[in-house]
Image (cartoon, rainbow, N blue to C red):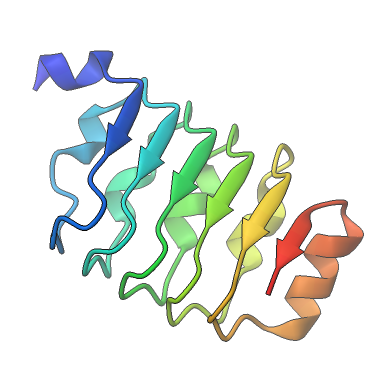
Length: 122
């Protein structure tokens, strides 16, 4: 898995994957597109602290707790997932843009993100 450490852009959109096993080795990834799959567990993203842009649109996500550790994340697309609790995003000081189209994100949390200067699309 050592070769995965050198990847800085990772694109697996529309690949019908449901398991992120191995992605945790992409420790230098800055951009990752995992949209259009059947992903329901993103725990393996927890240690990808260099990530700046992440698309998880059109998956089967409900829990985004693993995103709370991605301290360099600036852009995240969570559209068309079953996400309700977006509180993990509140910890991301560099976050600039979030797409929550087609989610059930809690309106109070959306307002809190917007009030912190994050552009939120709902």
